[in-house]
Length: 262
Image (tube, rainbow, N blue to C red):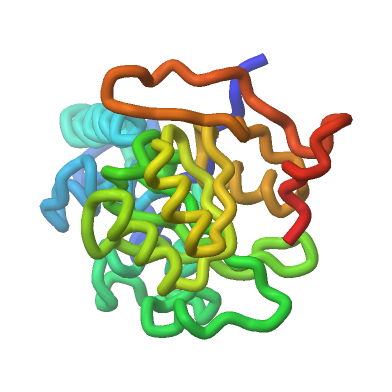
């Protein structure tokens, strides 16, 4: 079965949705989806590169390239053949503020109050569990010591109540462990992580769930539900990135690795 497409995050719906050539006689219509419009807006109007666009929309850079090429063809079809251009539908969600730091305040008018601001990272509710995920282009970044951003998720009663993407203050496991401790993270979800980093995080009281791949949002949701598949014996260095098979929370004989426990 094909993997379902991840929703693409867009800043806001377009102000204008229908374009028609005044002297055209054709009734054919080209449908440009909202996510295709957003890529055109970001790349061609805002002059952002594909990597920044991917961060804003919460998908991979290759997905952005594919969307961009499809959108450009549709626009050219409308211009060359005089077809109506209608912006409609698509696989998207409106931005909740989680991409605000990448686009700037002026481009995120509907930023929600649920975003964890960097100023409030140290203020955490008594019943909140804060989980950090190594983050790049919507995915779990695979090398802890080189991660440039974390996505933080606040979890309460088994549900994610807020999230935020924050840039790190430095590279290397010592600086990153300190950043997570200052941010009051209780747990870390990551890909590969070395022994030194695991020791630094353990000293900071942060539990590690390594060997995780794929969508950061899906990993956090699985963690909140106690279903995260991870490797409790993960090891990683620059010479060997082959890891052991995953470990599923809740399996018999692994109560000490239950993601649902605080």
